[in-house]
Length: 186
Image (cartoon, rainbow, N blue to C red; front, side):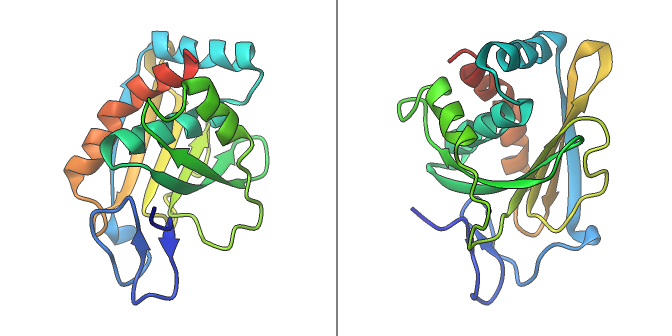
C-alpha cells in the first residue's frame, strides 16, 4: 500500500493522483467541476446523521474513501476535513472495496481515524456546509458539499490538472453518490 503523500521526493506524489508534480498546485493549476445530489440523497445523508449519531462530514469522508477504492484502488487516504462551525481536523480513512468493510464499518473507521498530528500532509480536503473554504487551497483534490437546488446538495470538485486527468475526477464524481448510499445504508 502506497503512502498518501510522499514528502522528500522531487515533487508532490499522492497515490491517488494520475501524475506526480514538482510543486503543490497554484490557482492557475486548478480546475473545478460539480454535480448535484438530489433531495433523496440529501435526505439519506441527513437521516443517516440522525440514525448513526454522527456528523455529515464523517459520512462524506467514508463515502469518499469508498469512492476512491472503486475508481483508483485500495489504500489509506489522509484528508483534511473542514466544517463551517468547527475547527479543521485531519483523518486517515481506509479506501476499501465493498467486500473489505461494510458501510457502517467504514463509517466507524472514518469517525475514529483522527490523526491529529499526522506525519504526512493531506493531499485531499473535504468540507461540508455553507461557506466552507470558498477558495481552493493547496490540495491536489478538494470536495465541497453544500446545500443545492430543490433540497439537494451541490458537490464541488476542485483538482490539480497536473496531477489528475479530468476523466479520473469525472469518474470520482459519478461514483460518489453510489458510495454515499452504501455508507448510509450500513
